[in-house]
Image (cartoon, rainbow, N blue to C red; front, side):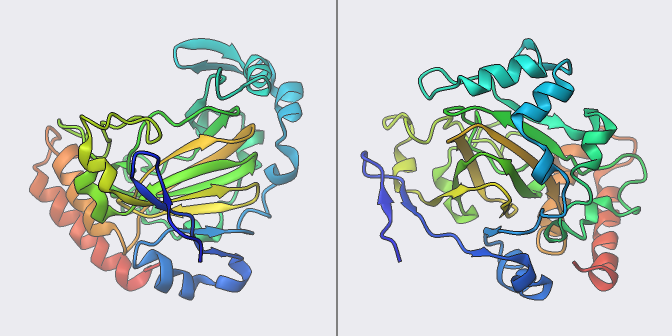
Length: 298
């Protein structure tokens, strides 16, 4: 086992260890028992091989076939071809704009078909169940395209305590993660719907005077490569930086392992102000959770 890696400021402390498995060898039962239920991150190495995107989605492909696709990245209006050109020239000193959290539903239908169906390790996803999607879907497949040196702008865990699944199509990313028990060191933002976002925007160059406790945190640091899928469980703080020009798809999810936390967050942040009182949504989601745990646990 590798020794933990210490930051030059004597913290946080990172382990470089994360389990990696082929889905064909891991299987659903063991996956749930060893990773989903205990909320333990894992990398699945062959979960998206059925996607046409695995062979089609190159930067040349996006430039040549979808170069005129209009995009907005950090307030800038860019075409896909312009973004791809800047991504190719990106450096850590001058990173290209990072297209992130771009809704897959806004992509042309042909591109959406290239990443369907979602890999088995993401489901069944209770958020896709008809008992939940009466008004609108609560799953959000998203696209990320960025160049070397670009970083996700915040340290966070996914909203409503959903699981995150990150599927790497091109390039290499480095992820940093902190388990839920490290939350006292994460300096959560105050205010409604912000508890899942840290005030620490840069885990490499953090304010040691303002965020003293962050130096005590213990986390993991690892890379994600093309064809790999990262399961980042509910409540795990994480962020990423791009090591080489990168294309990633993400989706959020919920099941028996995180339904209680999802239900509480939904009632705390989403239910107030709706037509029915929070107590109704709490009772309904409690009922749905018990029903799905019995008939569609995973």
